[in-house]
Image 1 (cartoon, rainbow, N blue to C red):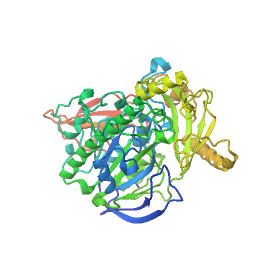
Image 2: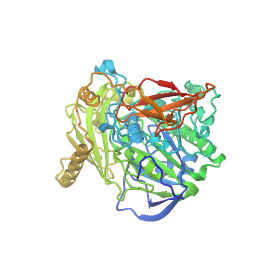
Image 3: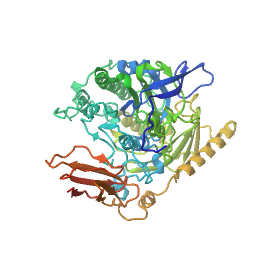
Image 4: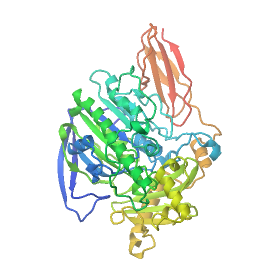
Amino acid sequence: MNLFKTNTRPSVIIYLVGILMVGCQTGPKNSEKEIAIASPIQLGEQPNILWLVTEDMGPYIPSFGDSTIVTPNLSRLAAEGVVYPNLYSTSGVCAPSRAAIIMGMYPSSIGANHMRTTSYTEVTGLPSYGAVPPPQARMVSELLRMNGYYCSNNYKEDYQFEAPKTAWDESSPYAHWRNRDENQPFFSVFNFTETHESGLFEPYGFRNIETRHYHEGDRSYKWDGNRMAEEETPIHLPKDTEFDIPPYLPDTPKVRRDMWKLYNNVAEMDKQVGAVLKQLEEEGLLENTIIFFYGDHGGPLPREKRLIYDSGLNTPMIIRFPKKQLAGTKDTQLLSFVDFAPTLLSLIGIEPPPYMQGQAFLGEYKALNERKYIHGAADRFDGFTDAIRAVRDDQFKYIRNYRPEQGYYLPVEYRERIPTMQELLRLRDEGNLDSIQALWFREQKDPEELYDCINDPHELHNLAQNPDYSSKMEELRAEMDRWLNEIGDVPNLPEAELIANLWNGAKTQPITSAPNITSSNNKTTLECATDGASIGYKIIDKDGTTPKVWSVYQKPFEVPAGSVLIAQAYRIGFVPSEIVETKIE
């Protein structure tokens, strides 16, 4: 099927297997009772799709087994939808994971896995650069725009590359489905920053910015970009609440304070989610919209974020289908962030392109077989570099450390603002960490690690040298080698060499060629000499009115006489071309 043409049909039927399971788990448990429900999901021809994305989010909500905080909006979404407990990011930090989501490709395969490639250049001695996917690759939002969807992002991007102007109809603090043409299908993304790790060392993260979610689409609204003062912080649970402290953290007042802030932030995020869902429902759009809620990776605490243990990769997901289809069920299949883009295309009847490394788990092009493994990778974080790869099946996690001579702990300055991190360092220096808490601070790593993630969910007991698990080690080693070879990942490649490969040996970032504009037989054609470039354009009418949105060029089109056509070309990871313009006589 042509990638850029929707399949004309009266409806889409998704055959989805929902799994109801007893209890809470970090992976499917064969010993638990399973009830399989095979049901067809009925969708309209072009359903709306809404993504509600929060940050640094482990399974801290009631629908995933943690009843510490009440989340009425997410609990309602779960009761009316399907819960997915086994979704894993490709990295324990946001930008590489967001690259995987938006491209359907592993970040370590496109130069997107080093966190903050446009900063820390004085520390690394490297030039600023962005990921460079293959020429045929596009952000999935651009593919949807080419198929008639209005695509909005509110408002965080952070993909390890600059998004082309062709990627979104609008990406801003005011972006909203409300700004689309009448009856146009939409793909809208809303990002919530309440639960970000900064909310542990700031009174409320970006709390005042988040009020924009009550005013979406109204560009006249002036929102407050400042952080809240401590005394302004809404309190959603008593500060003396008892918490289950993970064994890798000490049980001290400061740690308990951070746990309180974590859950309090989750409750505030739930309010913001509710505001967006209320808008959707009030506008009569709820029952023609597929709603996704998920986090951009695992939790915000030390030994969670930036690591590729489950605490850093596992994040909850809820999907609500129109008319509450499969309401209240649980699907325990393994899912990866690279599966999002192909699934999004599949839901609207477009066959995912071959360059995407994930597989659709819903829709017309749902994969015949559920995935058997998920994969993760860790490289540079700010100014500190490591090289770690992981593969996990439904029970076991295999980790390969390419720099075993250095310890796990990296002194990332941003993380050290967290009071819990300061507590860990204080107790480490005093020699008062217990044997589990001290694991993260050992001077060297084991070259290989193997964990039983069901019986050892915090991944504390390395089984790699246990002969009882030799066959599992061989299986997961082989799977890792297969995966690395398939995606072209070379772990521990010096970053300077990576940049040289991305830039095809050039010393400076490549520049996208300017588009060429030609007209013939009342049709205007746009071309670019840079392989794989997208071309955006605007038509300024004879009265001088300029559209707000850059259209995506697909084929020759008519331009009214007397208009001015402006165009710009983009290749992801390259410098955008200059803007060219011509008057159409």
